[in-house]
Length: 106
Ligand code: FES
Image: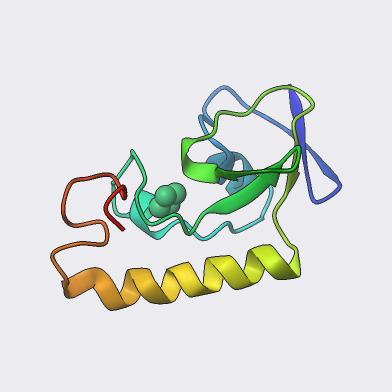
């Protein structure tokens, strides 16, 4: 199976279960702080990507053959940056990834 990230075709191995892992294997670092901290369900929403015009979260999206993903784009970069700031500011707060809601409260 192959997917495309920002125009680059990437072979997907059986060990890669989501877009964060596939991108990492190709040297593309999608920021994924809550995933990196073992919150497998995702909650920070920093790992934003776009697939067929829809916003998705790379840590919770399984690769599918010929999937065409946009990662690097100014508007997406800006959203990710703002969410990263919010995530980092909220690390000591009871909400923002620490309340167990899966991000629905934020
Ligand atoms: S890393 Fe995907 S939601 Fe946090």
